[in-house]
Length: 422
Image (cartoon, rainbow, N blue to C red):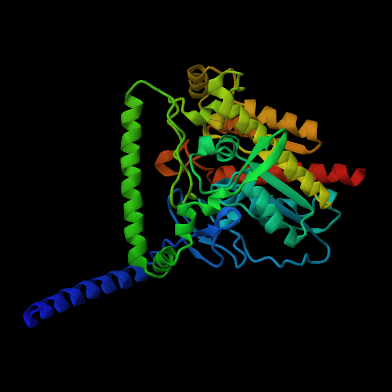
Protein backbone atom coordinates (compact mmCIF):
# COMPACT_ATOMS: atom_id res chain seq x y z
CA UNK A 1 0.00 0.00 0.00
CA UNK A 2 1.39 3.38 -1.02
CA UNK A 3 2.06 6.06 1.65
CA UNK A 4 -0.49 8.38 0.04
CA UNK A 5 -3.21 5.72 0.20
CA UNK A 6 -2.30 4.92 3.80
CA UNK A 7 -2.67 8.57 4.75
CA UNK A 8 -6.07 8.75 3.03
CA UNK A 9 -7.27 5.68 4.89
CA UNK A 10 -6.05 7.10 8.20
CA UNK A 11 -7.82 10.38 7.51
CA UNK A 12 -11.06 8.61 6.58
CA UNK A 13 -10.86 6.33 9.61
CA UNK A 14 -10.11 9.26 11.89
CA UNK A 15 -13.04 11.18 10.43
CA UNK A 16 -15.43 8.27 10.94
CA UNK A 17 -14.25 7.75 14.52
CA UNK A 18 -14.52 11.47 15.26
CA UNK A 19 -18.04 11.50 13.83
CA UNK A 20 -19.06 8.48 15.88
CA UNK A 21 -17.56 10.07 19.01
CA UNK A 22 -19.52 13.28 18.44
CA UNK A 23 -22.68 11.24 17.78
CA UNK A 24 -22.07 9.20 20.96
CA UNK A 25 -21.53 12.31 23.08
CA UNK A 26 -24.63 13.98 21.63
CA UNK A 27 -26.79 10.91 22.39
CA UNK A 28 -25.46 10.77 25.96
CA UNK A 29 -26.07 14.48 26.45
CA UNK A 30 -29.65 13.99 25.24
CA UNK A 31 -30.16 11.10 27.68
CA UNK A 32 -30.70 8.61 24.84
CA UNK A 33 -30.49 5.02 26.05
CA UNK A 34 -31.97 1.76 24.75
CA UNK A 35 -30.08 -0.99 26.57
CA UNK A 36 -30.23 -4.74 26.12
CA UNK A 37 -32.73 -5.86 28.76
CA UNK A 38 -32.39 -9.62 28.18
CA UNK A 39 -29.71 -12.31 28.26
CA UNK A 40 -29.69 -16.04 27.44
CA UNK A 41 -30.84 -18.34 30.24
CA UNK A 42 -30.11 -22.07 30.18
CA UNK A 43 -33.37 -22.98 31.94
CA UNK A 44 -35.83 -20.45 30.52
CA UNK A 45 -34.38 -19.40 27.16
CA UNK A 46 -33.85 -15.81 28.27
CA UNK A 47 -34.19 -13.70 31.39
CA UNK A 48 -33.82 -10.07 32.41
CA UNK A 49 -30.23 -8.86 32.83
CA UNK A 50 -29.45 -7.93 36.43
CA UNK A 51 -28.67 -4.27 36.97
CA UNK A 52 -29.59 -3.00 33.52
CA UNK A 53 -31.55 0.25 33.17
CA UNK A 54 -32.74 2.54 30.40
CA UNK A 55 -35.72 3.80 28.45
CA UNK A 56 -38.43 1.64 26.93
CA UNK A 57 -40.51 3.43 24.29
CA UNK A 58 -42.02 0.77 22.02
CA UNK A 59 -45.34 1.33 23.81
CA UNK A 60 -45.80 4.18 26.22
CA UNK A 61 -42.60 5.53 27.78
CA UNK A 62 -40.95 4.36 30.98
CA UNK A 63 -37.49 4.40 32.48
CA UNK A 64 -36.89 0.76 33.39
CA UNK A 65 -34.57 -0.52 36.11
CA UNK A 66 -33.86 -4.22 36.59
CA UNK A 67 -32.66 -5.04 40.09
CA UNK A 68 -29.52 -6.97 41.03
CA UNK A 69 -31.44 -10.29 40.95
CA UNK A 70 -32.84 -9.78 37.45
CA UNK A 71 -36.34 -8.63 38.45
CA UNK A 72 -38.16 -5.63 37.02
CA UNK A 73 -38.71 -4.35 40.54
CA UNK A 74 -36.95 -2.57 43.37
CA UNK A 75 -34.39 -4.42 45.47
CA UNK A 76 -35.80 -7.04 47.85
CA UNK A 77 -33.92 -8.87 50.58
CA UNK A 78 -34.15 -12.63 50.08
CA UNK A 79 -34.72 -13.11 53.79
CA UNK A 80 -38.31 -12.17 54.58
CA UNK A 81 -38.45 -9.34 57.14
CA UNK A 82 -40.34 -10.00 60.40
CA UNK A 83 -44.07 -9.29 60.45
CA UNK A 84 -44.17 -9.23 56.64
CA UNK A 85 -46.38 -11.11 54.19
CA UNK A 86 -45.02 -11.61 50.69
CA UNK A 87 -46.84 -11.99 47.37
CA UNK A 88 -44.86 -13.26 44.35
CA UNK A 89 -46.18 -12.35 40.89
CA UNK A 90 -45.43 -14.63 37.93
CA UNK A 91 -46.32 -13.64 34.39
CA UNK A 92 -45.20 -12.40 30.98
CA UNK A 93 -44.96 -8.89 29.51
CA UNK A 94 -48.13 -7.78 31.29
CA UNK A 95 -46.40 -8.44 34.62
CA UNK A 96 -43.04 -7.15 33.44
CA UNK A 97 -44.91 -3.94 32.58
CA UNK A 98 -42.18 -2.14 30.63
CA UNK A 99 -44.80 0.19 29.15
CA UNK A 100 -45.41 2.09 32.41
CA UNK A 101 -43.31 3.46 35.25
CA UNK A 102 -42.68 0.95 38.01
CA UNK A 103 -44.82 2.71 40.61
CA UNK A 104 -47.77 2.59 38.20
CA UNK A 105 -47.53 -1.12 37.39
CA UNK A 106 -50.43 -3.17 38.73
CA UNK A 107 -48.25 -5.03 41.23
CA UNK A 108 -47.07 -1.73 42.75
CA UNK A 109 -50.67 -0.50 42.95
CA UNK A 110 -51.68 -3.84 44.44
CA UNK A 111 -48.98 -3.63 47.11
CA UNK A 112 -50.15 -0.18 48.20
CA UNK A 113 -53.81 -1.26 48.30
CA UNK A 114 -53.04 -4.38 50.36
CA UNK A 115 -51.54 -2.50 53.28
CA UNK A 116 -54.02 -2.77 56.13
CA UNK A 117 -55.96 -5.71 54.62
CA UNK A 118 -57.69 -7.34 57.57
CA UNK A 119 -57.06 -10.85 56.26
CA UNK A 120 -53.31 -10.35 56.65
CA UNK A 121 -53.45 -9.75 60.38
CA UNK A 122 -51.89 -6.32 60.29
CA UNK A 123 -48.70 -7.49 58.59
CA UNK A 124 -46.84 -5.34 56.08
CA UNK A 125 -47.43 -6.63 52.55
CA UNK A 126 -44.54 -6.88 50.10
CA UNK A 127 -45.27 -7.72 46.44
CA UNK A 128 -42.35 -9.00 44.34
CA UNK A 129 -42.58 -9.05 40.55
CA UNK A 130 -41.03 -11.98 38.63
CA UNK A 131 -42.67 -11.26 35.26
CA UNK A 132 -40.61 -11.54 32.06
CA UNK A 133 -41.77 -10.66 28.57
CA UNK A 134 -42.67 -13.53 26.27
CA UNK A 135 -42.82 -16.18 28.99
CA UNK A 136 -45.21 -19.09 28.75
CA UNK A 137 -46.32 -21.25 31.66
CA UNK A 138 -43.29 -23.55 31.35
CA UNK A 139 -40.90 -20.63 31.81
CA UNK A 140 -43.01 -19.35 34.69
CA UNK A 141 -42.79 -22.77 36.34
CA UNK A 142 -38.98 -22.66 36.11
CA UNK A 143 -39.00 -19.12 37.48
CA UNK A 144 -40.97 -20.39 40.46
CA UNK A 145 -38.45 -23.16 41.06
CA UNK A 146 -35.28 -21.14 40.45
CA UNK A 147 -36.18 -17.68 41.74
CA UNK A 148 -39.40 -17.38 43.71
CA UNK A 149 -38.74 -19.75 46.61
CA UNK A 150 -35.60 -17.80 47.60
CA UNK A 151 -37.97 -15.05 48.82
CA UNK A 152 -40.29 -17.27 50.94
CA UNK A 153 -43.61 -15.95 49.55
CA UNK A 154 -46.90 -16.52 51.35
CA UNK A 155 -48.92 -16.10 48.13
CA UNK A 156 -48.00 -16.82 44.51
CA UNK A 157 -50.08 -15.01 41.91
CA UNK A 158 -49.97 -16.33 38.34
CA UNK A 159 -50.98 -13.71 35.78
CA UNK A 160 -52.46 -15.66 32.83
CA UNK A 161 -52.56 -13.92 29.45
CA UNK A 162 -55.19 -16.10 27.83
CA UNK A 163 -54.24 -15.69 24.16
CA UNK A 164 -50.46 -15.44 24.55
CA UNK A 165 -50.01 -18.26 27.03
CA UNK A 166 -51.85 -20.82 24.90
CA UNK A 167 -49.55 -19.92 22.00
CA UNK A 168 -46.40 -19.74 24.12
CA UNK A 169 -46.96 -23.27 25.48
CA UNK A 170 -47.08 -24.85 22.03
CA UNK A 171 -44.07 -25.23 19.75
CA UNK A 172 -46.39 -25.48 16.73
CA UNK A 173 -48.22 -22.24 17.60
CA UNK A 174 -45.28 -20.19 18.86
CA UNK A 175 -43.02 -21.20 15.99
CA UNK A 176 -39.68 -21.10 17.78
CA UNK A 177 -37.20 -23.67 19.08
CA UNK A 178 -35.50 -21.27 21.48
CA UNK A 179 -37.42 -22.00 24.70
CA UNK A 180 -38.38 -25.03 26.84
CA UNK A 181 -41.70 -26.77 26.25
CA UNK A 182 -43.66 -29.49 27.95
CA UNK A 183 -45.62 -32.16 26.10
CA UNK A 184 -48.15 -34.67 27.41
CA UNK A 185 -47.27 -38.36 27.13
CA UNK A 186 -49.67 -40.88 28.64
CA UNK A 187 -51.22 -38.05 30.62
CA UNK A 188 -47.88 -36.94 32.11
CA UNK A 189 -45.99 -33.71 31.46
CA UNK A 190 -42.60 -34.36 29.85
CA UNK A 191 -40.00 -31.61 29.50
CA UNK A 192 -38.47 -30.83 26.12
CA UNK A 193 -35.43 -28.60 26.77
CA UNK A 194 -33.70 -29.36 23.47
CA UNK A 195 -33.47 -25.60 22.80
CA UNK A 196 -30.17 -25.64 24.71
CA UNK A 197 -28.57 -27.64 21.89
CA UNK A 198 -30.00 -25.52 19.07
CA UNK A 199 -27.59 -23.36 17.03
CA UNK A 200 -29.57 -20.19 17.77
CA UNK A 201 -29.23 -20.60 21.54
CA UNK A 202 -25.56 -21.58 21.32
CA UNK A 203 -24.96 -18.51 19.16
CA UNK A 204 -26.55 -16.23 21.78
CA UNK A 205 -24.12 -17.66 24.33
CA UNK A 206 -21.07 -17.31 22.08
CA UNK A 207 -18.26 -14.81 22.63
CA UNK A 208 -19.25 -12.89 19.49
CA UNK A 209 -22.86 -12.53 20.65
CA UNK A 210 -21.74 -11.49 24.13
CA UNK A 211 -19.46 -8.88 22.56
CA UNK A 212 -22.39 -7.56 20.54
CA UNK A 213 -24.52 -7.23 23.68
CA UNK A 214 -21.64 -5.45 25.43
CA UNK A 215 -21.39 -2.94 22.57
CA UNK A 216 -25.14 -2.30 22.67
CA UNK A 217 -25.04 -1.88 26.43
CA UNK A 218 -22.16 0.61 26.45
CA UNK A 219 -22.39 2.52 23.15
CA UNK A 220 -25.41 4.69 22.51
CA UNK A 221 -24.81 5.01 18.77
CA UNK A 222 -24.95 1.19 18.49
CA UNK A 223 -28.29 1.33 20.33
CA UNK A 224 -29.48 3.99 17.90
CA UNK A 225 -28.55 1.88 14.88
CA UNK A 226 -30.31 -1.15 16.38
CA UNK A 227 -33.44 0.87 17.18
CA UNK A 228 -33.52 2.34 13.67
CA UNK A 229 -33.32 -1.15 12.20
CA UNK A 230 -36.17 -2.26 14.48
CA UNK A 231 -38.30 0.76 13.52
CA UNK A 232 -37.77 0.04 9.83
CA UNK A 233 -38.71 -3.61 10.33
CA UNK A 234 -41.84 -2.61 12.25
CA UNK A 235 -42.83 -0.20 9.48
CA UNK A 236 -42.40 -2.93 6.87
CA UNK A 237 -44.40 -5.38 8.99
CA UNK A 238 -47.18 -2.82 9.41
CA UNK A 239 -47.21 -2.29 5.63
CA UNK A 240 -47.50 -6.04 5.07
CA UNK A 241 -50.34 -6.18 7.62
CA UNK A 242 -52.24 -3.46 5.73
CA UNK A 243 -51.70 -5.32 2.45
CA UNK A 244 -52.88 -8.57 4.05
CA UNK A 245 -55.95 -6.87 5.51
CA UNK A 246 -56.87 -5.59 2.06
CA UNK A 247 -56.91 -9.15 0.67
CA UNK A 248 -59.44 -11.87 1.61
CA UNK A 249 -58.98 -12.74 5.28
CA UNK A 250 -57.18 -15.96 6.01
CA UNK A 251 -55.80 -17.38 9.23
CA UNK A 252 -52.09 -16.74 8.96
CA UNK A 253 -49.45 -18.80 10.73
CA UNK A 254 -48.68 -17.71 14.27
CA UNK A 255 -45.95 -15.08 14.55
CA UNK A 256 -42.66 -16.61 15.63
CA UNK A 257 -41.77 -15.12 18.98
CA UNK A 258 -38.51 -16.73 19.98
CA UNK A 259 -37.21 -13.48 21.45
CA UNK A 260 -38.63 -11.28 24.21
CA UNK A 261 -40.53 -8.15 23.23
CA UNK A 262 -37.52 -5.85 23.12
CA UNK A 263 -36.28 -7.79 20.12
CA UNK A 264 -39.54 -8.91 18.53
CA UNK A 265 -43.02 -7.83 19.58
CA UNK A 266 -46.11 -9.77 18.54
CA UNK A 267 -48.47 -7.24 17.00
CA UNK A 268 -52.18 -7.58 17.73
CA UNK A 269 -54.30 -8.31 14.69
CA UNK A 270 -56.70 -5.64 13.47
CA UNK A 271 -60.14 -5.99 15.02
CA UNK A 272 -61.71 -7.18 11.77
CA UNK A 273 -59.11 -9.87 11.06
CA UNK A 274 -59.64 -13.34 12.61
CA UNK A 275 -56.01 -14.35 13.13
CA UNK A 276 -54.73 -17.59 14.64
CA UNK A 277 -54.61 -16.22 18.22
CA UNK A 278 -58.35 -15.60 18.18
CA UNK A 279 -59.01 -19.34 18.16
CA UNK A 280 -58.67 -18.99 21.94
CA UNK A 281 -62.27 -17.71 22.03
CA UNK A 282 -63.63 -21.02 20.70
CA UNK A 283 -63.67 -24.46 22.27
CA UNK A 284 -61.45 -26.70 20.14
CA UNK A 285 -63.36 -29.38 18.29
CA UNK A 286 -62.28 -32.92 17.52
CA UNK A 287 -61.46 -31.88 13.96
CA UNK A 288 -57.86 -32.29 12.82
CA UNK A 289 -57.60 -28.54 12.26
CA UNK A 290 -58.10 -27.96 16.01
CA UNK A 291 -55.66 -30.64 17.20
CA UNK A 292 -52.85 -28.19 17.96
CA UNK A 293 -55.11 -25.91 20.01
CA UNK A 294 -56.64 -28.85 21.83
CA UNK A 295 -53.18 -30.08 22.80
CA UNK A 296 -52.08 -26.59 23.84
CA UNK A 297 -55.09 -26.26 26.14
CA UNK A 298 -54.33 -29.63 27.74
CA UNK A 299 -50.65 -28.79 28.29
CA UNK A 300 -51.44 -25.32 29.63
CA UNK A 301 -54.03 -26.63 32.09
CA UNK A 302 -51.68 -29.39 33.26
CA UNK A 303 -48.85 -26.87 33.76
CA UNK A 304 -51.01 -24.49 35.77
CA UNK A 305 -52.28 -27.37 37.90
CA UNK A 306 -48.68 -28.50 38.49
CA UNK A 307 -47.64 -24.96 39.36
CA UNK A 308 -50.52 -24.73 41.83
CA UNK A 309 -49.57 -28.06 43.41
CA UNK A 310 -45.97 -26.95 43.88
CA UNK A 311 -47.08 -23.68 45.47
CA UNK A 312 -49.38 -25.45 47.89
CA UNK A 313 -46.64 -28.02 48.56
CA UNK A 314 -44.37 -25.21 49.75
CA UNK A 315 -47.03 -24.03 52.19
CA UNK A 316 -48.02 -20.95 50.15
CA UNK A 317 -51.40 -19.98 48.69
CA UNK A 318 -51.92 -20.01 44.92
CA UNK A 319 -54.08 -17.56 42.97
CA UNK A 320 -54.41 -17.52 39.17
CA UNK A 321 -55.62 -14.27 37.60
CA UNK A 322 -56.73 -14.26 33.96
CA UNK A 323 -55.99 -10.89 32.39
CA UNK A 324 -57.70 -9.18 29.45
CA UNK A 325 -57.21 -9.18 25.69
CA UNK A 326 -57.82 -5.91 23.81
CA UNK A 327 -61.02 -6.94 22.01
CA UNK A 328 -62.59 -8.34 25.20
CA UNK A 329 -62.55 -4.88 26.79
CA UNK A 330 -63.05 -2.65 23.75
CA UNK A 331 -65.37 0.17 24.91
CA UNK A 332 -67.49 0.00 21.75
CA UNK A 333 -70.00 -2.84 22.14
CA UNK A 334 -70.76 -2.78 18.41
CA UNK A 335 -67.07 -3.37 17.63
CA UNK A 336 -67.05 -6.38 19.96
CA UNK A 337 -70.26 -7.69 18.43
CA UNK A 338 -68.89 -7.35 14.90
CA UNK A 339 -65.72 -9.17 15.92
CA UNK A 340 -67.71 -12.01 17.50
CA UNK A 341 -69.83 -12.40 14.36
CA UNK A 342 -66.70 -12.49 12.24
CA UNK A 343 -65.00 -15.27 14.20
CA UNK A 344 -68.26 -17.10 14.94
CA UNK A 345 -68.56 -16.96 18.73
CA UNK A 346 -71.33 -15.79 21.05
CA UNK A 347 -69.10 -14.19 23.68
CA UNK A 348 -65.42 -13.46 24.30
CA UNK A 349 -65.00 -15.07 27.71
CA UNK A 350 -64.60 -18.75 26.81
CA UNK A 351 -60.92 -18.87 27.95
CA UNK A 352 -61.75 -17.08 31.20
CA UNK A 353 -64.55 -19.53 32.02
CA UNK A 354 -62.37 -22.50 31.12
CA UNK A 355 -59.56 -21.39 33.46
CA UNK A 356 -62.15 -20.75 36.17
CA UNK A 357 -63.42 -24.32 35.74
CA UNK A 358 -59.84 -25.59 35.95
CA UNK A 359 -59.46 -23.90 39.33
CA UNK A 360 -62.67 -25.51 40.61
CA UNK A 361 -61.47 -28.96 39.50
CA UNK A 362 -57.97 -28.59 40.91
CA UNK A 363 -58.90 -26.73 44.10
CA UNK A 364 -57.30 -23.32 43.62
CA UNK A 365 -58.67 -19.80 43.22
CA UNK A 366 -59.05 -18.24 39.76
CA UNK A 367 -59.99 -14.59 39.38
CA UNK A 368 -61.20 -13.38 35.96
CA UNK A 369 -60.33 -9.72 35.34
CA UNK A 370 -61.71 -9.34 31.81
CA UNK A 371 -65.45 -9.20 32.68
CA UNK A 372 -64.86 -6.43 35.24
CA UNK A 373 -62.59 -4.62 32.77
CA UNK A 374 -65.28 -4.81 30.09
CA UNK A 375 -67.86 -3.34 32.46
CA UNK A 376 -65.48 -0.52 33.39
CA UNK A 377 -64.68 0.22 29.72
CA UNK A 378 -68.39 0.29 28.85
CA UNK A 379 -69.25 2.61 31.75
CA UNK A 380 -66.35 5.03 31.30
CA UNK A 381 -65.87 4.74 27.52
CA UNK A 382 -62.11 4.33 27.86
CA UNK A 383 -59.52 2.09 26.24
CA UNK A 384 -57.62 -0.06 28.69
CA UNK A 385 -55.10 -1.32 26.15
CA UNK A 386 -52.78 0.79 24.06
CA UNK A 387 -51.04 4.14 24.06
CA UNK A 388 -51.14 7.32 22.00
CA UNK A 389 -52.30 6.70 18.46
CA UNK A 390 -52.66 2.95 18.99
CA UNK A 391 -55.41 2.88 21.62
CA UNK A 392 -57.25 -0.42 21.73
CA UNK A 393 -54.24 -2.57 20.81
CA UNK A 394 -51.24 -3.87 22.69
CA UNK A 395 -50.57 -3.91 26.41
CA UNK A 396 -52.34 -2.33 29.36
CA UNK A 397 -52.04 1.41 29.78
CA UNK A 398 -51.83 3.25 33.12
CA UNK A 399 -55.61 3.24 33.59
CA UNK A 400 -55.72 -0.55 33.21
CA UNK A 401 -52.78 -1.09 35.57
CA UNK A 402 -54.45 1.04 38.25
CA UNK A 403 -57.75 -0.81 37.84
CA UNK A 404 -56.06 -4.24 37.85
CA UNK A 405 -54.07 -3.38 40.98
CA UNK A 406 -57.23 -2.38 42.83
CA UNK A 407 -59.30 -5.37 41.70
CA UNK A 408 -56.60 -7.98 42.34
CA UNK A 409 -55.83 -6.48 45.76
CA UNK A 410 -59.50 -6.71 46.74
CA UNK A 411 -59.66 -10.34 45.56
CA UNK A 412 -56.44 -11.28 47.32
CA UNK A 413 -57.65 -9.65 50.52
CA UNK A 414 -60.91 -11.61 50.24
CA UNK A 415 -59.04 -14.90 49.74
CA UNK A 416 -56.74 -14.14 52.66
CA UNK A 417 -59.73 -13.32 54.85
CA UNK A 418 -61.41 -16.62 54.01
CA UNK A 419 -58.19 -18.45 54.77
CA UNK A 420 -57.80 -16.79 58.17
CA UNK A 421 -61.34 -17.88 59.15
CA UNK A 422 -60.62 -21.55 58.54
